[in-house]
Length: 447
Image 1: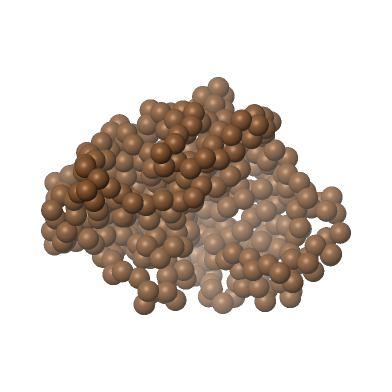
Image 2 (image 1 turned 135 degrees about the vertical axis):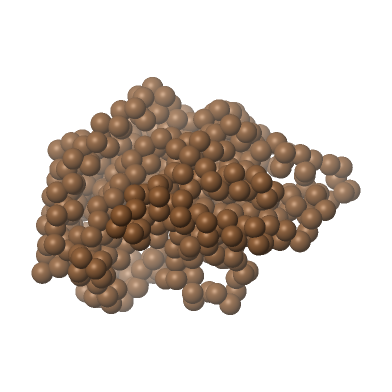
């Protein structure tokens, strides 16, 4: 069965983030089913989904609560356009998101995926200033090593060369501030000190370009696709203060870090800030269906609220905006959060992940083990003392990936960074196995 499926796949599919020629030597794995933290292939092999299937799965595969919500909703209403119509699941979800997210975020605009949520925020921010008579505010400040998606607008405000450089000629020009990435801190600086120092570079750019900047776009606390680099929450606080002072919007991309990944429901909470826009996706539907939302404030909403003939409306749409089944899934996921006290319960798992991973920092080819909540990253290096990285062409992370699969664990490193972002239903024994396999894989990859 597996061989047949692989042959059929390779005849017709083009897979994401993949050099398809790799599959001449790296076998594809057809998955038959999922249950809890496990994925199972057609040969009966099971794999702990240690990366939540690209960071989306929160409560395990085939979760009965979510399955039941889908079954109910599909009998009631599968889809209706959200222009001129509405439905109960999207209203319920919007009310709940407004109550859960930082204060002031009071309006929800839905799309299909994270990149689209970023596009919405960028367009809304620029269009707000246009409606306010300030069309010159049309540029965006972003962080070096940031990633916000693959559509052209989202890609333009990202700064990971691997994804961006090829399409550079197609993109708008952005202003790039150095990342507060604490992996690069001086030996004597703690995370907070380093983050404060790096904010000075951001402040200089804000002061210089305030009159032409619509918004600053950031991933709070963790630059996920940027090799899981992390920074201190003080940076968020300082940035919010500066954006307020210089009349610039703050867009928080919590697509990957929202819904408990960093230890709080939303990463912005740790800086005690409310952004002007918050973009959510991935965990929004607990890994089940495509859905994203851009939340914003009444002040911004009001700038578009006018007589039709003024042409101030936000004319942006997606066919499946606010899909009822996806919204029902998101509501079921929020039910699990509230009924199971997930954020509080995860604190024990967070502590256990740290306990089980601390020793890996002693590995001769590990420069750092870093963690924000349920996200753990291990930086694999050629030279520990100088933090000299392995050449990316050596593909050391690929060796960890292949070894981990042979041991029943799905780890998909980002270059030389091995990371762990599991579903919240993982138990201590499974955590131990994943981290043991990761450490052994690093030893094999660096031997």
